[in-house]
Amino acid sequence: MDHYSYQKTLKAIWEDAVAKYEAGNREPDSYFDEVTQAELASVGLNTMDVYDYAEDFVTREEPDFETFLLVSAARRDYFLTVQEGKPSDQVIASEGLPPKDAEIKGIVWLPRIMPKAYAKLKGELPAETMYGCGGDRNFFKNNNIHPADFLRAAWAYEDDASKLIDWVVAQRSS
Image (cartoon, rainbow, N blue to C red; front, side, top):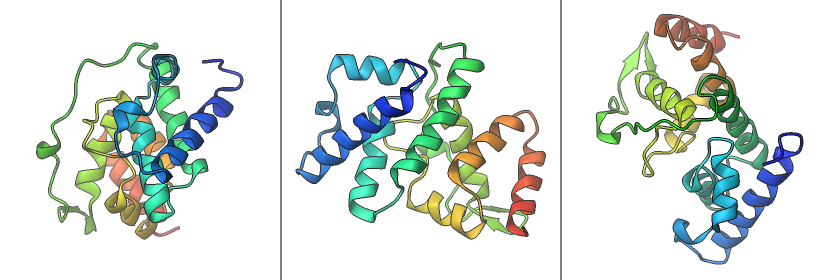
């Protein structure tokens, strides 16, 4: 994918996925040809990274394209910078995520969203787990945090979870 205009390519891919979902296609594996899959892989993305956002946009009217783009840009930056363009061979186990009602410092969902964010950055989310799902969006809205900002903070503080927690606390009060 051309780095100068990758956002235009992602927009075309996202719009195509939205159109397919609106037309009734619920088979993510049929969404993209090999060329498109390779373009996505070149920026650290996969079919589900697009499908999940298109599905929720069509059925819930969020997240919008701009959010998809910002989240994808954070993943792309991590992929190209930290991972040097090499995908991880790890995938987290969805069942290993903390419970949805778990909390840290009285903040529900924070223990769950943190490992999801780290996994999103590294490209290690399983197909059945979406970063930016409805529960995540509630967390982001309730804590005044954009999903892409949380990813970037997770990256900045990936070696010290307590700093990420403190960052979330600060966002809540701003």
